[in-house]
Image (cartoon, rainbow, N blue to C red; front, side, top):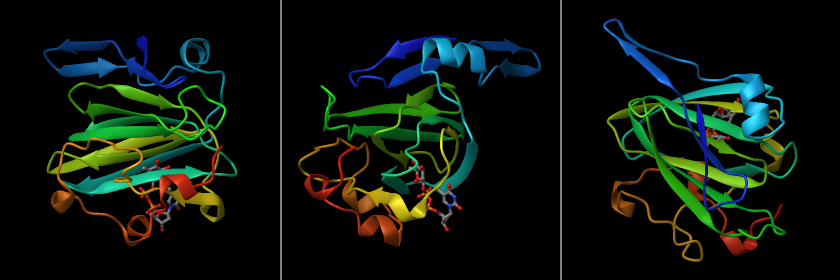
Length: 180
Ligand SMILES: Cc1cn([C@H]2C[C@H](O)[C@@H](COP(=O)(O)OP(=O)(O)O[C@H]3O[C@@H](C)C(=O)[C@@H](O)[C@H]3O)O2)c(=O)[nH]c1=O
């Protein structure tokens, strides 16, 4: 497994070692000892799995209580995954980072607590799987507009191709959103 730093302090790309043979492939998707020494010394308490069609954008989400670190990956299709640094004392506060995650490239992204997170589905269908360091807390959940002009996130599909949940259509502007 390789762990690669990004432009955002604490956010890391993980490239697992994939063993291919005539049957298909094998990879380890998570090892607690490796993760704690290379990424962050945290424990995971909840695993999630979602499936979405092309053009669906889920995000940009975070919780102000029970803040969640998330270890995310794709098991079918491809997404463009984006995180925003919401930590007001961070040198990379308000910056974003995006990466293509797919079932083909097997990449994972470690998103520490204090980041807003979301993804856009680029394939016909995508299945998205992730581990969280704290439990779902809908009362403290915040959704920030994916196309907030202050953030200037460059998404690989146009606004007319992007579909949101009703909740995410009501997303907040970045400048009004609670900082972490
Ligand atoms: C996230 C979540 C949702 N739910 C329920 C609430 C709701 O009825 C249904 C769908 O919820 P949502 O619309 O919030 O699902 P979704 O838009 O997929 O929310 C997720 O988006 C990605 C980008 C993240 O980073 C996650 O942390 C999470 O916020 O599932 C849970 O029961 N537990 C959970 O942990």
